[in-house]
Image 1 (cartoon, rainbow, N blue to C red):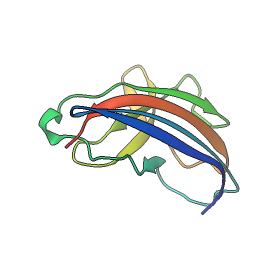
Image 2 (image 1 turned 90 degrees about the horizontal axis):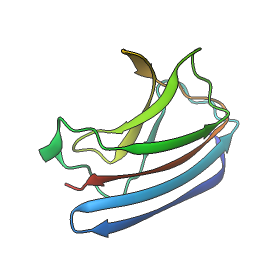
Image 3 (image 1 turned 135 degrees about the horizontal axis):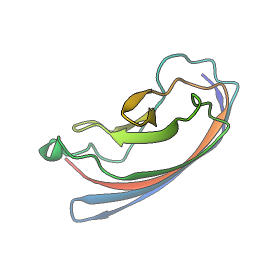
Length: 111
């Protein structure tokens, strides 16, 4: 659980393509494990299981390992984003921070 000071999102459906924007900010979170964001308006199509859809991120207050960059991806058949940290060919899921902020936008084909 945590205190969410901002939880906003919007989407536009054009045919089978979902365009979305999300802003989320939290404090005092006591969760553990990998960070993910649930609640996308539609599940991601499994037809494109080998395709990664572009997700644009801005982060504030989210810790990364030295030299790593934050990324997120959409999981086929699911309606959530998974956050990772990436450095050259090494990547790992991003752990839950007690406080932070994401501004996210992207698109995907809906199931």
